[in-house]
Length: 171
Image (cartoon, rainbow, N blue to C red; front, side):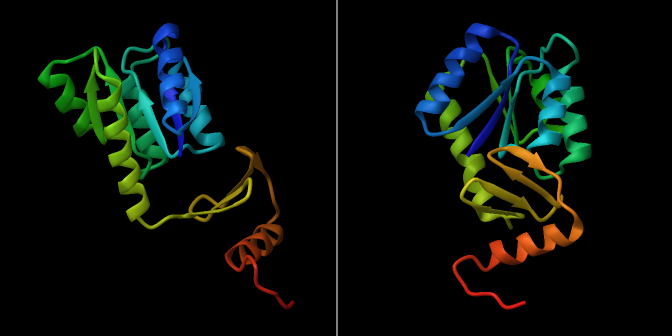
């Protein structure tokens, strides 16, 4: 499960990365909102953990951009803003969950497991085989999280082979 952690507090980010990796998650960390948007466009994570107080833009603006680009991407807000109106605004803007700082790591991990379960029950648009991920919704292919550009014919051939992995194929 790949997590994109969007957090500008370096000490908190280091601690979160360590805890998430220890729990079995793969973590990519960015400090800025625009970096988060670019990262999702390049290699879509499974879940985004998003701080609202970012140095370059408000986290809600990042959330809205992510929702415009990737409707189904789960986003958990992790922020110091703890007012009810902040929570309602974030959830109404498309956040899947909201956790206020300070928090217990066990609660964060439990909430991430809930989002992961929801992902596994939804229709997956990704085919993963070894280090190759083929996203049938966006028609993107990634090898070890690096996007690879394929022609239409190459994409269709790879898709057919991955969907029928382990079986002999004819022309």
